[in-house]
Length: 203
Image (cartoon, rainbow, N blue to C red; front, side, top):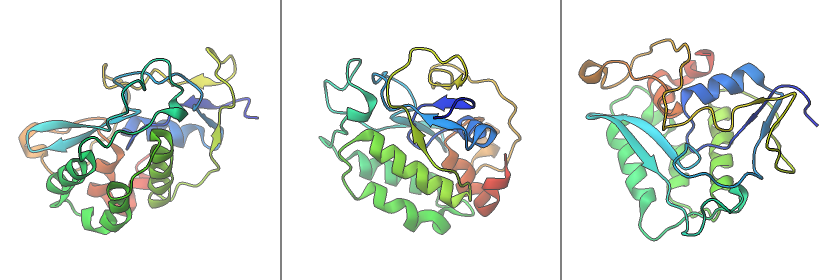
């Protein structure tokens, strides 16, 4: 059992700040899977850089998968083809980046296969992203829900799309920065598509 380090939620294409925490605390990280699913968080949302600025991508969940469903039991909704929308958005925003084509074949299956559960989808995506960034550590998960942790740093509600997360972030080249400047804390894929194999050294 991890007795020091950090507890983190499982996010969809997590933001850069999340990977900064992973890098800082690994391998002493617990991933939260027993919490009730909170709405409007990065658990099913990611922000990317579009020609018009920040573009949120949201994974829809089955109705009823709200406050009283454990996050590991939340099911993805396929009532409309969100996978096609997300993939087209990623491709149109990053096709001109230096490394989109380099990673395209690795990411494409996540927008073709149907994953029943949001947690499993996010977890497999995270494992791919860690591998692409050459970050290696075993993943450990919560077995019960704890409202508070006395020995672990708790980041379950810290990094949120509803409020700016203040942290030091070095600028890197972004595709549309001449239009809107450098945008902090976008999805890790923004860093990956723009920096490629160097993304793992960014932290």
